Image (cartoon, rainbow, N blue to C red; front, side, top):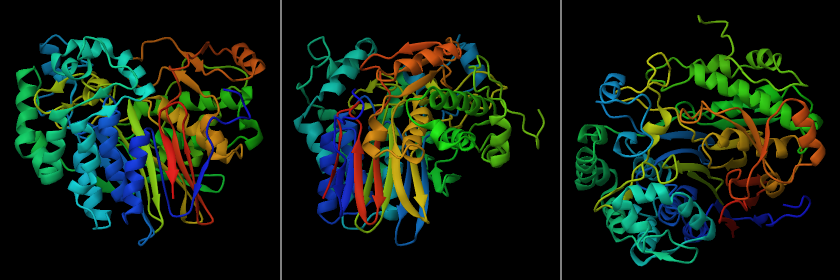
Length: 542
């Protein structure tokens, strides 16, 4: 990537904007807006198409978090659309069955998928009333039934997951028809998924969580070693609440509360706010070093203190305070990388994914992220339904009873999913987010800093090369050695200086990449849309 030249132009429009990781999803959302729908209507249609066009990332078996701004109320809502672990899932059960760590794939890795209920909840509460769920899922059903061409980067990700797909005959039947993964341009038909989408379109949450679909999912899970029962599905509900927030250089930055780990970004911003903006300008050694060290501190706190708020007393008031950020900032050595970073002392206490955003002419804005967790989730399509279930429980929980994120009956794991909005003068100014597991808080912080500290346009902010400090919070990756992965394009002198400060640098390959950010900026009644060239998508407005 050559600095100073963008691979895509900023999209400018006045009546509505959709920015997604796939052009067919962007088109579906725009059709709803131009037909009189609002941002929530368009978001539901968009999410439906993404579950078909990017099947390894999202779909009916996924989880969802979102922020919804209702202009008529001048109020921002947060939605937690994540599901629970089975009631039989205990540390003792896993130990008795020979598991020292959580299984990453298969039916033991699954939590109740919350995406359908989140979609229905948003439509019921904030939709325009002009569209039924059936109408909004029509495009997704059509692509599943008649076929969807595989986009170039989707083809790459499917090829990367070939070993996972091959493990499960029900999945291989769909994605490896000829014994090999599809290539870009190949058309994938998913008749079973089309039938499931029709059932959800007609019956909503009742069909998915208490109807025939729920019974099919549970029977398959139990027949393949899973612990899910109909009770977990029947009792599932999305949570709607006020989001958490911090301030940063004149912006109020909002995100979803735990079990989302959006708080990691807020803590990072609180720490970075203590440095002058010029020191955080993209491409300098100081900007990378200080942000990486802030990341290490925030991730250490996340690992030590945060879990499902129904089971863990999350110290949000402390972790979000400016005083606490100042204490954490004080342990950063501006000239030397820290290899080991402990959690902060709490003075008052003892001791693949897809993101998109939509904005409409009425002023409503939706920041929406939905995910199967790892690429292809648990890896296993539930036979006869076409539904890939998530592996959120396997990827998120640990089997350490002293850990706040230890698995337990009916518990939600901490989530990498996090949507964002920034407000100025009480109104939405920016909606943004990215897929990418533990890369999400790091890349979201970098994109926002590029705008708030560096004054870059949203397309420039998204396209600038990114870094990724590894490991993060994923239990499957925690034992790995610490390293700083950087995309090509950073100045050579910056990389040399970071090495001198003790960072173990590794350059990322072209498709290893730093996420797939999407963003909408709202300024003086005009929408500015940006979409990441790291994915196949686009921003489009009217």
